[in-house]
Structures are given as C-alpha cells and as structure tokens.
Length: 134
Image (cartoon, rainbow, N blue to C red; front, side, top):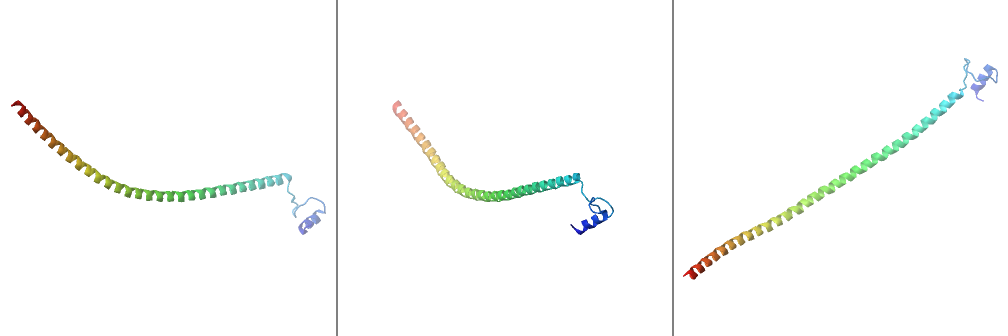
C-alpha cells in the first residue's frame, strides 16, 4: 500500500471507502470509468484513423509529385519531337518546292510546245486545203 492510501485509511479508520482529507470519495464510479474507457477507446480509434488518413495523404502527395515529374519528362520529349519534326518537315518542304518548281517549268514548256505544235498543225492543214482546192 502507498503511504497516501495508508494515511486515508488511518483517517477513516481502516476498511472504509477511500476519501481525501475533506471526506470526498476518491473512488471513481463505475459509470465514470466506463465513460473514460469509452473515451480512451474512441481516442485510440480516431488516432488510428488519423494515422491512416495521414498515410493516404502522404501516398497521394507522393503520387502527385511522381506524375508532375512524368508530365515534365513527357513535355520535354514532346518539345524535342516538335523541334525535330519541324526540321524534317522544312527539309521535305524545300525538296517538295524544288520538285514542284521543276514540274511547273516542265508543264509550261509542254504547254508552249503543244501550242507551237498546234500552230504548225493548223499551218499544214491550211496548206493542204489550199493545195487540194487548186
């Protein structure tokens, strides 16, 4: 027994209820101890829930950081591909323009030759008409 408990027993005469020096009972009623146990259980449960929520938040933050890094990486790859595609397409455009210009020159030349051939044909047709009409 503790010294305080012994002193209280001595004041009350031994085996009576536990009281302080003012005579107020120091024993906790059963309903209070049950409420205290419920409070502690609730507190432990809430603490556990908060720990779980904290873990979920940490996982979420970690995933967001990972996705941000992935996004930056993909953005850099996209920029590289766009730059490369622009360079390749400009070379292809130059080649296309050269070939198109050559094709246009050939078309113009062919039109000129066709027109000259048509004139020559008209001349010959006219000459033949004159020759057969005489």
